[in-house]
Image 1 (cartoon, rainbow, N blue to C red):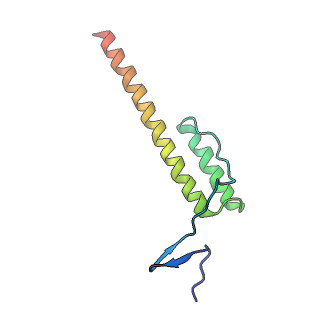
Image 2 (tube, rainbow, N blue to C red):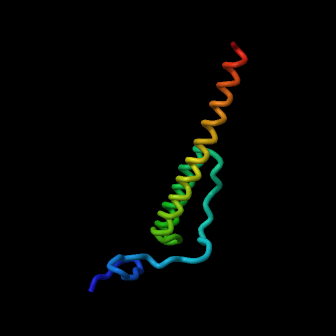
Image 3 (spheres, one colour):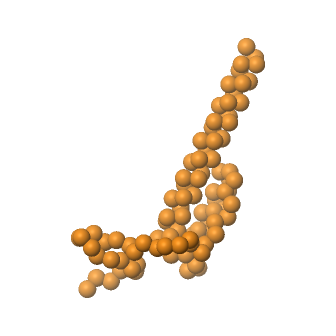
Amino acid sequence: MVVTPWPCVFASNVWRLPEKTGPSPFALPPIENIEDLSRVTSALITAVAEGELPPIEAAELSKLVDAHIKAIEVTDLNVHTHHCCRSRGAKD
């Protein structure tokens, strides 16, 4: 018998984790800019280490954090590009 540290369901020759319904009880710190990333990842790591958050949920939340940070980067790049284009246009 194989014992795993996570509850799994064996179906169709694929190990799958049971789907969780409802929101996570863990609240992420606000993410306003790239500098907030270290505070957020630190909170996730601490929550896992203290047993407040299962590693699987932390991994899923990390994906959301990554997507949010990418959105911030794209927005910042867009603002910077717009500002540079306007500055160049004003100098010409």
